[in-house]
Length: 205
Ligand code: B1M
Image (cartoon, rainbow, N blue to C red; front, side, top):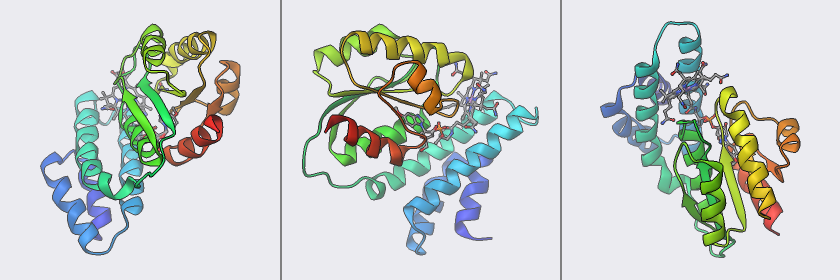
């Protein structure tokens, strides 16, 4: 089994103590950081499918997420670029009622490496908190993540509140689509962390 395949399996099994070492071994063996990251993201898909099928439960999902985060920590310096220009402040968070943060953290990391000064509000962030912090910090853009179909209304509330307050908003997360982003008046939508950077840069030009 290749090292990357082994990482994928160990993330799904939630082997948190092994992941950092395995990721380092894969890098030392010549695997690319992006290849390892994509494998871990795929692994979370498998975990989600097993959860949907009733084969695993919330604690297993949580431990797999922890394992992935350990792997991302090793990749972080390699995935993050070295931005030489400042593009302004971006406030980011996962919307109210939603505790998923791996995707949001990846988006935050990529935006930071592109030159944004990031203020990360974490998870379960109410709409008024996004607005308050964006105002306090003169944010050029606000990024809101939502992973649950049940928190899509919170994403809408957040986007509308930020638009009312005059901010530029970008949204994303697995259940979000361009059509939904348009419906909730967000300025931009991105399906993944890489395209979030392209879209955010385009919006603050
Ligand atoms: Co949850 N969960 N979860 N979960 N969880 C999902 C999302 C689910 C699809 C699993 C499933 O059933 N197949 C499902 C949602 C179903 C739905 O809404 N239709 C689900 C559920 C149901 C739940 C609970 C309700 C379970 C329960 O309690 N019964 C519960 C809700 C808790 C809450 O939030 N209130 C719950 C809890 C959890 C854990 C806490 C255990 C854990 C999260 C831990 C953590 O994040 N620290 C967890 C996990 C790990 C998952 C899965 C397995 C993995 C999520 C993940 O990290 N993916 C997930 C299944 C899946 O995703 N296939 C699932 C990897 C990550 C890199 O991808 O976050 O999609 P993602 O980010 C992507 C893009 O979406 C995009 O970029 C990233 C990639 O580059 N993106 C943006 C994200 N944000 C963006 C913002 C942008 C732009 C792009 O601009 C601002």
